[in-house]
Length: 315
Image 1 (cartoon, rainbow, N blue to C red):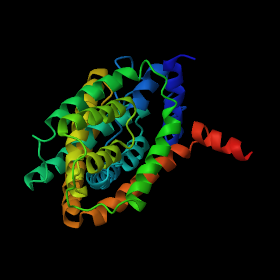
Image 2: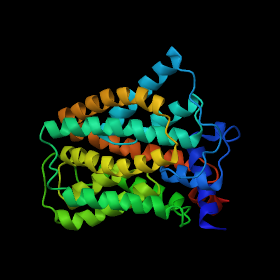
Image 3: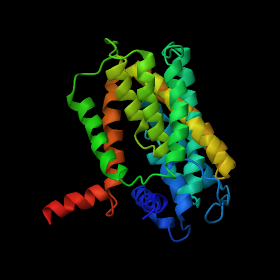
Image 4: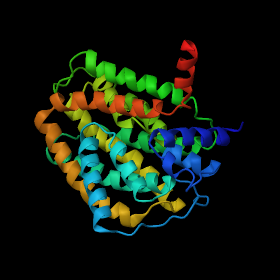
């Protein structure tokens, strides 16, 4: 089986885990477009199915607006807002590729809103992370390219284990506080770690915010709120790379992205205010919840390789 065919099957499993299965018959996914879906990046080939914009009834506008506010709030604190916004976009009739592409745009507005608020409050030092930002951009671009060449099904086994590890660290490990600690790496050395996470975001994506937050706390010694603020900057950089590719591929429904961007802006502001007000008391449990929620989504698919392996042990 080729890497592209393997990625296609992997994409179907990931879409199923995100409750995309209801649209699988209506919007069949071919191998090339499945690669784009699984990496949450664009593909220059033809869009499968019809990229249509649903009729914007008051009910649809209200649904997308509410979902985007909630998603923006969650994203600003712990990431994982796509668990709310993606099903909302699919529920109004978008095919999976268009839903993920549109979600990337509107989610980036929420991330930018939260980042702006953190920066205004003096929580973001762009000079400190200038090299990490550069390598995140490079890594995200390389990851988006690599997903077309490498079979990424192994991530279905590795990712749940990593996310559970992150949840256990924040739940049982040293109590995260807002006090900065001794940095284990210089910003330049950390840039290579950030570039690796950016590569992962381009290659696949779920849980990227948790990986950034954990690495900033453990390796740069940042307090949890400060790490959350800098996570927004790094995440936004990798998102921008993805949006460029998605836009070139013609997968974005700009009307819906614009509607949800308003809600994301509001939710991002609210979430960043809450993060700065309540600090680790709010951020830490949400990081645990989001990491476990993404894990549950991945493992909810009966075809998930890790689930199959574990089931085989007890059969």
